[in-house]
Image (cartoon, rainbow, N blue to C red; front, side, top):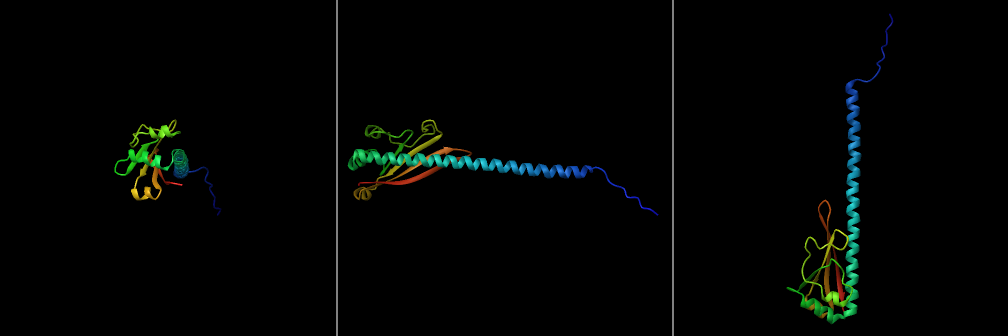
Amino acid sequence: MKKTLLLKKGATILEVVIAATLISLAVIAALSLVSSTQKETTYARDLNIATKYNYEAIDRFRQIRTAMGWSSIVNELTLDSISNETVYCLSFLPTSEAEFSALTYGACSESNFINSTRLIRQVTFDLVAAEIASGEVNGIITTIWQGSKEHSVNTEFTLTNH
């Protein structure tokens, strides 16, 4: 007796559904990875730009300290201080002693963006009398931006009487 071997041709519906599901899962995973990578890349770029703006502000304050002299800059900061703290919104960086003297005390509002950016930058000077007497004023530059949520970067610095 001969046995006849029947060959199956084609795939069953169940096999097609399983294959389509597996392919769909692979595509969804790849798209999710691309989306996550894009968000992280955007955050890293924004963090880099915000840090650059912070260091730019620190350099500017050191230039102004050199131009004005130690006692003049400390006097200006002290005049604007409330409870040994001076806060300025830095939507632009002062380029001269007059512009520095014209800075208005106060934190930034939600619309005080740095020109042509979506970044908000402010500086806070801590005016502790003992540190001023020893020739130091500490500051923190904070730059804030809005991505999928609010982000910020703080950079601490010290102005010294040299």
